[in-house]
Amino acid sequence: MTITLPDRATPAPTDKTTTDKTTSNKTAEPRVHPVPSTPAPEACDLTAAQVEELGRRLDEIRDRVIASRGADDAAYIRRVISTQRKLEIAGRAMLFAGILPPAWLAGTTLLSIAKILENMEIGHNVLHGQWDWMRDPKIHSSTWEWDTVSDAKSWKHSHNYMHHTYTNVVGKDRDVGYGILRLSEEQRWRPYYLGNPVYNFLLSLFFQWGVALHDLEVEKVASGEKSKKDVWQQLKGIGRKMRRQFTKDYLVFPALAGPFFAPVLVGNLTANFVRNVWSHAVIFCGHFPDGTVQFTEEQLEGETRGQWYLRQMLGSANLDGGPLFHLMTGNLSFQIEHHLFPDLPSNRYSEIAPEVRELCAEYGLPYTTGSLGTQYLQVLKKINRLALPPKHVTPRQIG
Image (cartoon, rainbow, N blue to C red; front, side):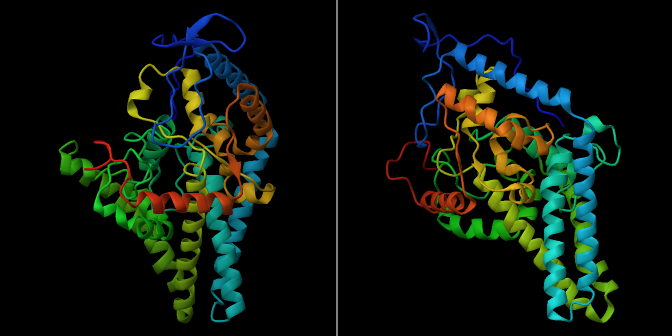
């Protein structure tokens, strides 16, 4: 599933005026504003013309990378896939000797790394269509099924379409809270949200299950927007994938170990927990630390291509680290670049990140980045703060 960007020819809104930074002409101010209750850098000093010029320059970066994709990129993803499979085989083999503590620890570690690589750098990016240009049916978004309980079809709808089209738009992007957490001032507070810290802890442990179920939108059944029949049809598809994953990790491989059933079972369970916690941390740090901006549905009206780009830049955050760290995050440590260009090969994000950062500096825009520890602490503070009722109540915030 692909992202449809607003066409670059779409005329800019003309409801407000401001002075261009380089000329004295009056031109329309972009209709991209942070949610008022969310602390965020101002981005409204840019004129509509500047925003569309920014979009044009980002298009040039995208076009250049697309034109230069080739053998080196193909070799990269094939090498990562080969490495991941070798790590998984080695990890599972060592777990068969898991009655010995060193073997169990080594096997669980290798299997954890393999699962992280498969989900983050391979599955996530393959399903974005980043490698479809290779025309390899084994590495294609239409055929790939990944090692997680979320089935590819449902995930591509909830993530590729809903999340990447409506990034950080409260009420449209269901990744804002995953239907469980309060992660925005604009979400109405209810006593239920007092459990925010607990829900977040459980979500991190069982993240693959939360991701699998959040596309069901069960809250729409109560409101009458979605029928129980539709939910049941979705649930049957998701259930089949869940059953396969559960059988593979918790029945088949432990059974193959014979008398060492228990160590293999615990090793698989631990590897899944490690993968879940890591994925949760990386993804939340890419979307919810200090400096990221959230938006309202009203701000989507008349959104141009340039404004869509701007919203991605303001609503995302990067993580600092070295090549191995970036690999283990699936290059989602370059979340800003990923949200600008979700279907470009992930190995190219480090190449274009300096250019994007320079553009941000040139246009006076924030380029939010920081260490994993610092940003995750900011996310946890936000989750804890939003568990409590707002001090200054508006009709939208309590319900």
